[in-house]
Length: 92
Length: 135
Image (cartoon, rainbow over the protein chains, first blue to last red):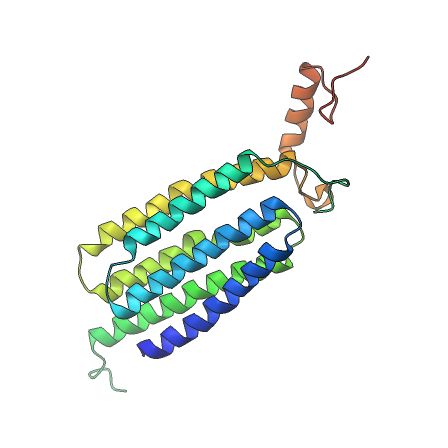
């Protein structure tokens, strides 16, 4: 059963990562890109979790916590220093 | 498949497989929400799905697959850490998004911050665009 689950989740997570990367590339504002980067990090953490569950080890657990720290520090820092430089507000 | 032949191992495997697939679908839902929703606030709503519920389901799958009891406190600590950091960063991003007007005001059903901002601007002698008042 586990190889099938691995294949299914690999396809799903690849599609999700593709969508997040499209939003990072297209995102009209900096905050949209920060948000999509957070989602990309969450998808990476999900992939690490699935690797641990399928192969039955716990090596990635510290990496998972480190990824959540990186997402937290990154989005807080960027949100602190973001500025509005658009000509027309509300265009998002 | 007789009930006698289904062992506990198979049941645990099936439950964790369902958890893994549903947890991965949370990520896909967040990606679709990021692509389809119109502004920053609604995209933030979609983005929290894999960060909390998706991670919960996947950590449960890890705990079920390891078949030991001592991994559960470690997984709970990892999940609680995520629960503590995600609201803070979401608050900062939402605050910056409100201040730089990355939202469609006509899509909001309630804007409780607007009155507070207006009142604070009036007290400090600024108009609503943040410029000093000239009169």
